[in-house]
Length: 310
Image (cartoon, rainbow, N blue to C red; front, side):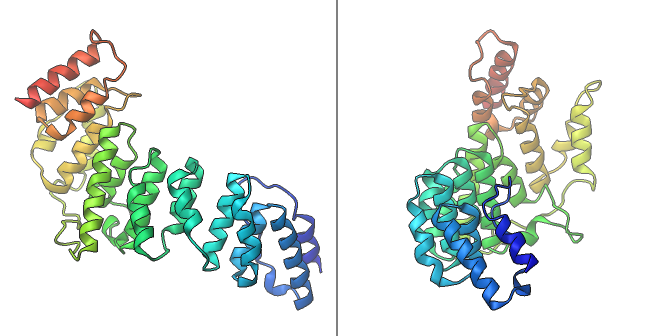
């Protein structure tokens, strides 16, 4: 009875970052106690309690469908979202989450991507692919993670010890998706969409060059970063000039991220110029947004673009 009393006493409490009630004690309840707890959850759900809605979904009883559906029209967006998420748990319609994934707030879009990631169907898959172009980096990255899991490609992003391989092609694309500069994340979104659409059509991960192949030294990433941030010495261009493939692509992405407007790293501009990396030209241009044409960074970027374009 203590379990039940503790549960009932907390049914109306608001606990930050807790989106469902703890049911670890559930099997310790008698049948009658479970009914009392369920009635309390139903009452709370009917009052628009998002934790109660999510918990009813977790219980997996389709008798709760109508109660949950009634809250999909709640005036509060978070309550509507939780109701739609709970519906998925009970095998209900995913239309609410499909709507949130494109029209909701950032938090709603993120949660919708998360909950739809394992839901089958071409319509859901298309929504996840579209979310790769979401205006918020966290939603884009979550969509990429969801698609990687959906297509069973997680093993291509980790080594034998289970550690992430930043240079692996799928992870490198996800790094681009987290960028603030639109040309960078749009490139990542386009590449990801091409990959997953090709997989849908029958291409294999080997055919798409998704298996990481090391071309640089074991500590390539560390060498590039150390040389870049060693401001007392010129950057060692040969570190990048001497490699190709996945390692080279990672290095180019690393340098391109230094163009973000909060950074605008002149050293990165000069290195990209010397390496003549053409795909970063749109990002170079975007990094100058809002700068006067007399600004030193602006002038350096224009010089770099001219040199790369020759």
